[in-house]
Image 1 (cartoon, rainbow, N blue to C red):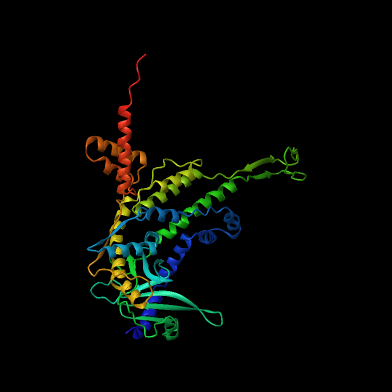
Image 2 (image 1 turned 120 degrees about the vertical axis):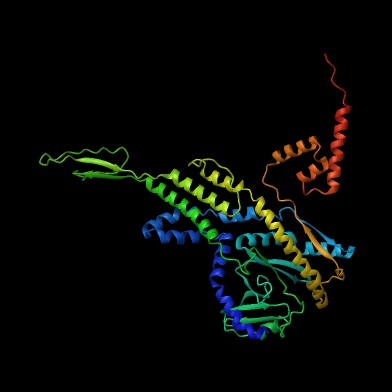
Length: 462
């Protein structure tokens, strides 16, 4: 079946070129390569002479990394996973997979890519006899669907690879996966049986019986989400506007002196210099000397940057922190505070619902398809089997609005004193990472301290 679809799949990949190029740019910026994009933007806007001066004053402040980090917090507190309808062997296997795959670290990376690209791909695989997990960024794959029932569900996953030829040149390869088949083809639309044989699958059979990936997608209506053009544009625009201010401030430092009907011979620009001018009695004009001092309205420009960043964040479902009026003295700290204090709790709560489904798909893929296949192939050294009825359930921590610890303590204290909650629950909410044993130990210590304080004799009055 796949052999007949090579041309169709290649054309699909080619049609995704603009999206893949955009995602490549986002990936580069997210990895720290922002400066080249700012330079290209300034080069298009300024004369060559002005650009050469301005580029040395570019502040390459990367708002993208800070924004993605603030949005991607649902795995910062380790979620709880348990085996529903499972045996002790299921619990042991669950623990083994969680730790071998470094589950929470990889899933946090997936969550970052989800907020960066609006989709990503998660792949369980085996390395040196141990199960692993990785998240693929959206410039490394595409998906395709033939489903008439649910066209948002991929029936094909295509990943991009490179192969070094004997002459040293690099060729692009496309790995295609369906529930039943596997195939590799190149840019000449030729099926590469040679490489398929090298990796041990010359017949192109997917022995797992399931696409060995889980696709994460923000869009509810499209198989591949549309480009968010505002992200790249705003991330570049903010440092460009700051570059404008830096360039303007530098130009403002240089005054231009001019003279009218003045003999300028012998005039030297030097500290403590004295200039003596004589008027020409034969003319009726009055000699004059003046200075042109550029004036740049910096304050409105800074307020513009603040307003645009704040409005942009609100369109992303984020409430920026209040910073008041920005001035030249508090600009850097003000923008930093706006981002640091932005409230992402509502957006993160939406992501929890999506990732509960994603985790369910990952564990279904592992327990019912990948684990039995890896065991049959001898790829992993694990004698235990998952029970056929087991279901791995993932519970995430509550995504609370951003509050400082002092505010939370005062609120919980009021609830405990009013009888609306218990000390145990208050401690658990304040310290969600604490185990039940640690909470018991803390409550015992608090009770002991209270007994000791009550038993101490009161000081005698003199």
